[in-house]
Length: 140
Image (cartoon, rainbow, N blue to C red; front, side, top):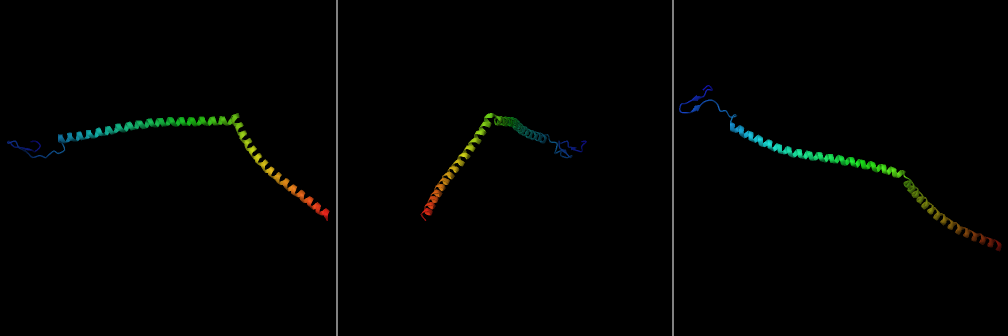
């Protein structure tokens, strides 16, 4: 043959070299293996894409909730400012201050009453001593 193979009339073919890499069955097996790997990769991709969509939906919901919380906090701040500026709040603060002043005045009154009692007792004792000294002096 042109490739250098010898052909025997008995049907024996000799010579040449083996072509190991070009087997159709080996290529077919490699193709099926690659298709199986591709199918597994596609299944994994589908799973990952579903998880990614779920994460994106969760992120969007989280962003909406954060915006709602921010709006609620802002509204609460405005309401607090409005309440602090209202007449009823100011009156409440005045009442609390007056109650504190009343408590302090009551305590001061109690202390003054104790001092008055002590001073009255001391005055009575001093008056007795003066009378006693006057009697002693008169009796001498």
